[in-house]
Image 1 (cartoon, helix red, strand yellow):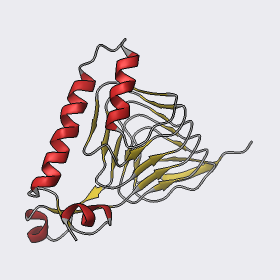
Image 2 (image 1 turned 90 degrees about the horizontal axis):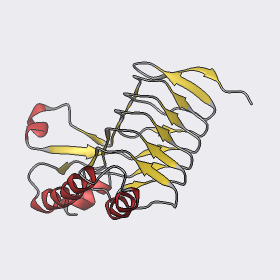
Image 3 (image 1 turned 45 degrees about the horizontal axis):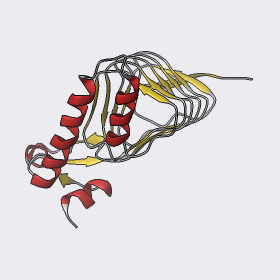
Image 4 (image 1 turned 180 degrees about the horizontal axis):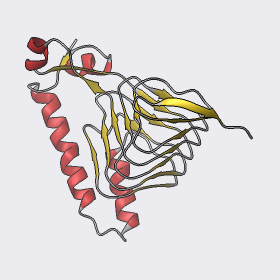
Length: 186
């Protein structure tokens, strides 16, 4: 199994020194740089380039500049997706957003994690676990979502939260660590 296959399988892989993965990251980071330097009012060009960056998009979306990711092809966004400024997605594994997802400024989604053992960590090894965000989700400003987390449908995540565990559907969740504080009733 090569390093990319290990990465996508959630196993420890060489993130820092594998030439193929480094090339893939530079390719997409150059595209992100290009995207972030397009005139903000040129929505058509911005969306065209974003469709080249992301693995899958639907028709209606807007991602405000700046935007940063590692690979791009592991990111899927649903219909009516909006992300405000400074969205960072570290995507060595899949990051999937459902329909009607709204993300406030300065949010980060990290599929990558590192071994607790310093020797393996210092060798450049890491692992990556997928993140899934359901439909009709609003994520407040400065939220961080950690590897392996699933956020259900119809969820509000409060500003400043660190989401390190799954969040069920139909709730408001806040805090560090993020926890459910109330159910959302129709």
